[in-house]
Image: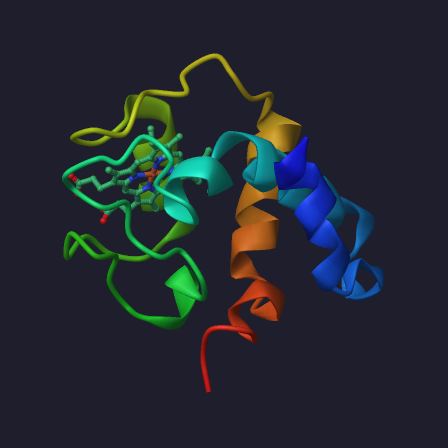
Amino acid sequence: MTVLGSSGCHRQGQLTDQQAEGKQLYDVRCAHCHEYNDLALKKVPPDLHGVFNSPTLPSGAPATDVQVARTILTGKGMMPSFAGRFTTAQMEALLAYLHTTQFAEEGKP
Ligand code: HEC
């Protein structure tokens, strides 16, 4: 509940419906690791803020929708597989949200 409650600091009004859906999915499924590392993983989950602004992902793989979707579906290292967890529309929403730089504004210049 704290995860959802903390969304108040983002100006959600700027997101399209699809991006807002993606943000919800991100907040629930990804943020606890990628923002808070609540499992205290030794390999700290990389910051996904503005992940598509760089040509490559932290691993060096190309920062493309296909590659990120593949990472989500198959997992990577300590990251679990989300195969079967998202519908196609939900995956598209998640990617659409990760393309927004809105949530990058706080952490980046
Ligand atoms: C249990 C914690 C955990 C969860 C939940 C999680 N991740 Fe990750 N994620 C990781 C870790 C750890 C890595 C680093 C993997 C590595 O490089 O070994 C990672 C890496 C990534 C990468 C970078 C891959 C690369 O090639 O560098 C992306 C993109 C990513 N995660 C997206 C997501 C998305 C989107 C979600 C939600 C659907 C998510 N993750 C959920 C732990 C998590």
